[in-house]
Length: 297
Image (cartoon, rainbow, N blue to C red):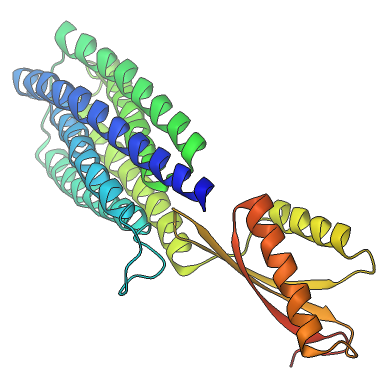
């Protein structure tokens, strides 16, 4: 449990740090890009600016969720509050989807109206700054997510990455805009589609963790090997399920034991395995014991 507490504190500090850095950088970028978009009359740059501002909003949500997720378990929430991080990731995804829909609608209207935009050096400089800054934030968030396993930080990282990519698309479009009047509207549509895809990946991962998932083949293999080291005669392990509560993980699985073992002996075997998994893998497990010759219906 000490290791779990340390991980929880590490998660909290990482989430708050990433969120604060993100809010500061994104707010500055928003002001810069919005000003450039208004000056040039570019819907794509204005859309890119609001995409950046959505990153600030999602980072504020991340900071709040990180604080909530580290509340201690209570009577109403015996498994803790760790899943606030998944809820935050879903909220971030919804923000992205709303922004994407608005950009898509406005870009299509501009195409219908044959609205053209002329870009200059200002648009190129501002968009280039955005690409570098946003990719830097994305790499920072991904590195923290790998260290902590915090899915909300990873979602925020993808938010930064999608913004960097949208700025790359805008930059390419700026260079081609003098040849094609419809380039700004097309860029708005492309950015909207990128946002929709980012929304899908963020929400899909968060929902998967909330619903519970099958552990990776790697962790199943490691646990099976560890059990075989304890009981060389071989126990059949199957029906693995993993529930991620962020601050800790709960795993359930079945083992098959010789039918001649008493209830007390079977319980002792299961308890010893549960203790080993807690100590070696930092996973709380619950084991269902079955007779060796039992067949599931």
